[in-house]
Each structure stands twice: as structure tokens, then as C-alpha cells.
Length: 400
Image 1 (spheres, rainbow, N blue to C red):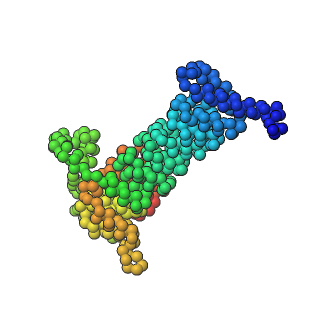
Image 2 (image 1 turned 30 degrees about the vertical axis):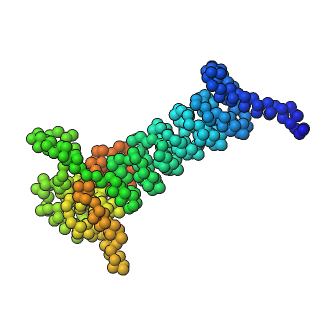
Image 3 (image 1 turned 45 degrees about the vertical axis):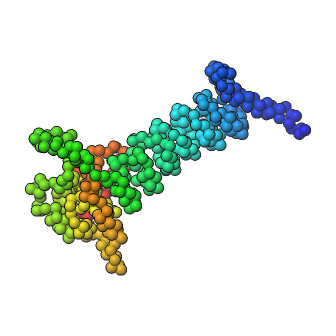
């Protein structure tokens, strides 16, 4: 027999291993064999020993406890805050960890611990929200890919805001069943062209059911002279007509077509505002459309307002964008935008346009508003105070 095993130190370590195992066995006994106070007393002793025990011993105890339906809170929190190889035994194998225990681990442990929690089955909304607060792309991507994780509306809004700084999150975000149009149409402004097309295909819905349901209310609201702002705003979203007929009376242009024709020779701030008003949009929505780098919103604007495809080219030209490349072929970006025009129906394009107009003015939470502002601060200085407050989303590229 090995001499070291016979030494007092060797015997002590052997006794420690045996003691830890037996105490873990007692904690794991069914309630018919051990009462709650005995279990709690044993757990307290076990916690005290584990603080000084070797990593291997802590891993063995964690594995032993992983199958318990209810792990004593003091033990769970000690082991979940431990090194990754110790906590992993519980985070991967224990299906019954409580939200308080997981939240303690989220706040007190490492990114690697949070990544394991994000991959657990059935992560609750509360735990997801706290994980999202850390803003760690790897953890958030794991949450988005976890079909069993439950994301709250606030959590989704926080992730939408974070996607502006990390494009990898957007494709995973698009697969979430909790995603709503209000999230998707904000996400639209900074994702790539493929994701934009997916958003339009998935969320550009018809308003026909709503229009049929409330068709008789328009005359009632008109009889009240549209004095109720709540019903007026909702009915403006639902109605079939996109153009603002009343704006013609105040406009220097005879029609929306005339304003687009004027823009063709060079878009100015004044013409951009007139096109917005005539299209039934707030100036800030029009500004966001005209300064968008991808150009797809131009197709949505033209289709929603009944303008022909040639109007897309006219606006493209007026914004001084390249129409034809060096080989004489159509610019791929313009071609992609024209395909969007052909792809989307008028009613669905109106839904998108009205969501933008609605959300950019009053439907956004502070987190989403800040995400939009983050990319647009540089262009605000050249505007008056009223224009700055109106044109929330102006970008640096807008040319006066």
C-alpha cells in the first residue's frame, strides 16, 4: 500500500472525501427519510466544508445534487457562483434550479456562466431580462437561438436596440415568434438587405380585416369633426387613403407627382418636406426615408402612395444616387429597390409606411428611440429647434 495513503494527511483527505459524499447523500434523501430541518442543518455543514474543499470535490457534490428536485438555496448559490466546471454540473444537468438562484448566478458569476444559463430549457422572462441587461452579444445570441427561452416585450425591445451595434443578432431575432411589427419596423432601419426583405415579407400585412370592422366609424368620427385624438390617430392608421388631400391646399405643388418631378433635379429640404406632407407623413418619417442608405423605403413610399415605378428612379436621381454603373448596367442597389416595389402590394406597403409614421412619432419606448438617435445625432445641428424636434431620425447624409 502507498505510504502517503497511510499518512495522517492522506487519511484526513480520505475522510474529507467520504464525509462530503455522505453529507451530500443525506441532503439527497427523500422527505420520508429526513425532515426539512435535518436537511437544512446538513446543507449548512456542507456549505462550510465546500468553501475550503478541492475543486474536484465541489464538482462531485454538484453532480450529486443535480438530480434533486429542490436543492437547498445556500448550496445552490455557493456552487452556481463557483468556477465554471463546478457550476456547469448544475447549470447543464439540473432542471429545477429556481429563478432566484439563476438570477444570483447571472449577477455574481462570469460571462461563461451566463452563456450556459441562456442555453437552458425554459429560461423564464425574468431571467432573460436580466441576462439581456448585460448586453453581451454571445449570451443574447444564445437566448435568441434557444427556442425554449421566453422573451418579454421589454426584453425584445432591448435586443432590438442592441442589434444596431451587432448585426449578428438580427437574423436570430427574425426567427423569434415573439417578434412584433412594432419591433421589426424599427429593426428594419439598420439591418442588411436580406433581413429587410424578410421583414417586408413577414410583417407587411393587409389592414383589410380592420377596415371592414371599423368602416362605419369614419362617418361617426367625421361627424365629431375628428376632435378625439385617440380615435383620429387609430383611424388614420386604418384608412385606405394614403395621400393627404388637405395638404394640397397649402402646398406650392399641384400634386404629389409634381413634387416628385421637382425633386428629380435635386432634392432639397423644402421639397422633401412637401413630399412628406402630401404623402400623409410627418417630416421626420420622410427624412428617415430619404436618408436611408439602402433605399428600400423609397419603394415603399412610392407603392403606398400610388406613384409609378418611374417615381422611384426620379427620387433616386434627385438624391444623387448612382443609377448606372461603369459598364452601363443598372446599379445593383437601385435594382434591388425596384424589385421591392414590384414585390409588395399597395395595401401592405401602406401598412409599413404607417407603422413607420406612427412608431417614429409616439409608439417607441425610450430604448428604441435612443437606438434610432444614436446613428443620427450629427445631422441635427443644421436645423432649427422645431425642425430638430420634428425630424427625429435625420441622418448625416441628407443634402439640402
